[in-house]
Length: 484
Image 1 (cartoon, rainbow, N blue to C red):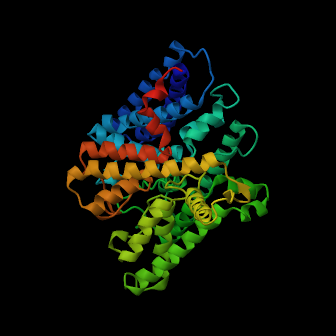
Image 2: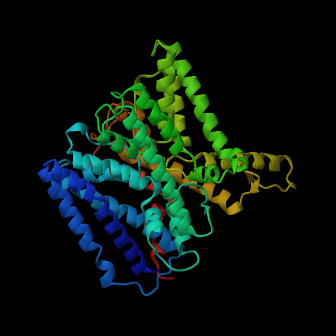
Image 3: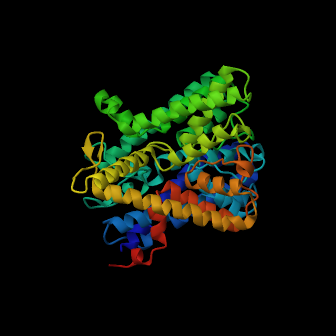
């Protein structure tokens, strides 16, 4: 176990976090937000000092193995969340540190679940930082490091890190060099974010609102700067967000293939067709349901809000233009189902991922065929290529642990005596990085009523969901920490 290399990665992350906090500090100073400026400044100084630890204990070997990759990713996300919560706590904006930690974990994991009851009362500098955590966590903080600086030596060192942080059943490089792949991903990410900001500004949205909303959309996080989420904005602005939420839920390799004009590969992508097909069908059914039952009296309004909420929930963004907690049972059931499915692998979205669902379906179909023809030999194929059996096994293992976490978390937070609907959807929303659930934690509610224990449990769920479970589980596995 290369403990010093893990420390080195954590120190790198702290430096990046300190730099990323600077715009928040500048905003607070310019607007005269003294408490926020002091809290943010102290955090920057503390993170900077802690990051110097790598010079006291330099790694003798810069090799990153599989264990170091998973453990360093999990530890980096925990540390970056703990440090990122300090400005909220020191400024007094969120007086309780556990609440500050919950809010920050929710930001970095792009969940969007909040304990705040009065969002608009937060200093603008902290509102900016709160939204920026979405953008930074969306593509991955260590993927960002891969793009800007060398992190380790060895043929598979960088791959172990990216595999632990990237969402999906398997990780593929866009180009032979992994660092170049990370640069391409972030270039596309930044380009789409800037394009959305421009379109929001064109619709009359103020600059600060446009930037923070784009951060929340790009990271598919859902932190809004208004108490009513996006309800008070115009239909045009809401439609822009609908489109970009759907775009950020697509595997980023699709955008790269489009730039290369490899349209045939895009059209053969089965996960993309599943994602778009389920999204379109869900929009149509919910629009019909809310119109037929009188929730909306105009077809246009029904389609508009159905499209927005389906795009928001399926991509696990969590923005809202309506209180879907009041929608008919069929519509709410579809939205809860979409919470499980989630977006595409390789996107900034959460959930089980469309690729895993497709793999599970294909594997199940193969199992049935084997029962009918025990001697037959067949492989599972995706996009015309055979899927490695280890990937299929890991997918089933992921699903088993995923279900165990849901049941365990529901049992632990049940002590708070909320309704079953609240507890179930709170856990599902946090583990799938969605944000709002139903009942008490619906789009017009929040998570402030939960106890400290429940907030810590749900914070773990958010981290586990964002990191695809395994890195967080390894933190509590003794054998993962052994030297050999």
